[in-house]
Image (cartoon, rainbow, N blue to C red; front, side, top):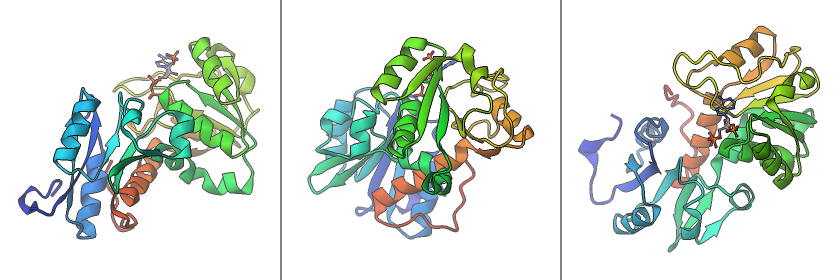
Length: 272
Ligand code: ATR
């Protein structure tokens, strides 16, 4: 009962996700079962969108109540938003849009979704330093979240110029991917934000020369496959790990709250 298409009526709230590509997204698997579980009359559908401008027109016509934003629109939606949170402003990306009175409000649940699985360590102040691998869109939310909590970040990336510009923007240090071995045993947290290891049968590890000592916390953002080569290596070394699915679910729960005003039903565990 993914879309409860037999139960739509004139009071059904419409939610969705815009992106391109978008049909592979797991977000409907989070939101629709959540709506059903709390008897919230709503549906969440993927919209394949090229023109953000055209979509905002459609959103007015359909009285869409809120939507998720994915690649490549996380930046482009901003001119249409009447209000944005501090995180959206800092990161320059919005992944959640809700209707507030007669305005669209933009938030970024990737930011808090990233922090949620490591909230205890962050609040206890046990994470002093972090190595963030990658300097793309996902990396920016991660770096700002860590920076805002007093963690000293070093960004390493294949293209040094990308690492350099993200580092200067976020007041972090940077280095090239080839120098990753320097950081073995030197940081409390390692976060993998690149797309390396994502495609099926991708047995690549973005940082093969980075050794894990077992006492660092290792966080992989990729959620498919569940365990990348990088993450398997961290598990084998005895590290505490956070999987991409944990972050995906946390950001989804926060989005559900932003959409409905209700907590995500704790008894629902989507197969992502
Ligand atoms: P996202 O929004 O998911 O972060 P992105 O903005 O396209 O995606 O960023 C992709 C990241 O993965 C970048 O840091 C990219 O490195 P470059 O800045 O050098 O392009 C990194 N990446 C992608 N393929 C890679 C590969 N084969 N080896 C190393 N890094 C790679």
